[in-house]
Length: 166
Image 1 (cartoon, rainbow, N blue to C red):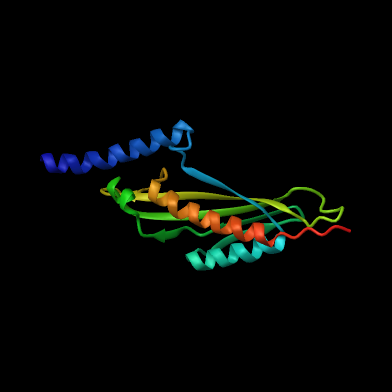
Image 2: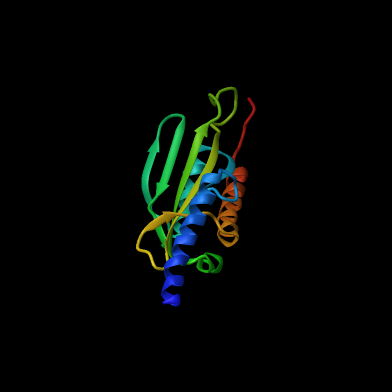
């Protein structure tokens, strides 16, 4: 009896913790993780984003673009949970990336079309004893993984930008 009560209580406590953390609005409890990736030309954004997605096994679900905006959203990728996610009761987890590049100006006057780039990340988890998927907060181990991807992309973007004077 006591064991089954514990099995039922743990998922409820974890979901409650996720919900409270998500509603706090603070960076430690947010369910959407945003990273500024600096600036990139449209060509570099498309090239380096696709290379990263291929390397990390993400598939593009949706890609939208206009003269001043480019948006790439991936399918949810079912990945192995990190140890600190397992410790929170996570049995399955999936991640979705969205990369956005917005024009910073007209591109005239000898400058290339340079865009501000950001990455938005969301995780959905299924907890022990539940069959429902819930948005989750970010653990230190996951942040380390996603911050490494962000650093690599930011480096690729910054080394690819060329500005020529007339």
